[in-house]
Image 1 (cartoon, rainbow, N blue to C red):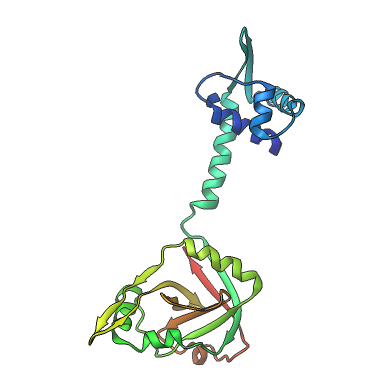
Image 2 (cartoon, rainbow, N blue to C red; image 1 turned 90 degrees about the vertical axis):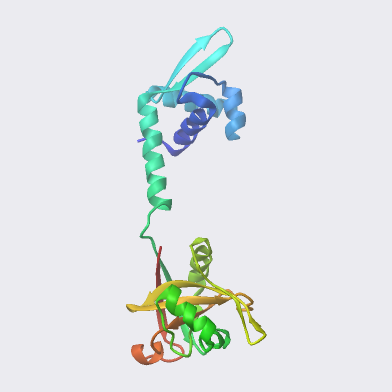
Length: 221
């Protein structure tokens, strides 16, 4: 088992080119790279060498370091772990909050044919003429921010009878197995702890809940 600080040092050597060839590394240069003291850098090099993760040789112009096969395997294992964290395709985000009365913006959207048609075509949802609104718990606000990095579905703006309607974006999700979507109008003034959802059914009736009830929303990437 490699110590975390030693792994950081090993990664720094690899980034300097130590995976493909021997690179010139002094305790001073490594210390500067890692923002540590030269004494600490020297101890980490010794630790890595004792673990057979690097090989060191002395030349006339200084010390040269190469990452060994065992060292490369450690780095590959770390790389694989990060890939599992960031590249999984079935990661599920869970938002929790309290059902509240709506602010009205989303309901405006579902009542207009130009939007409703797009909800049906792009989301597979023929929306009930109303929205389901949730005030997120403090712990779910940060999770909500992470959703911004996901691929939202664009709801295009359009013009109808000389009137212009702005765009929006939507993200499919589910509540107790019922398909729905988070809807964010293009020009919205919602606080970040409020989300508005559309669904084919009146979720209040289907779930038999009212204002103040606790709700769990699941979003799968």
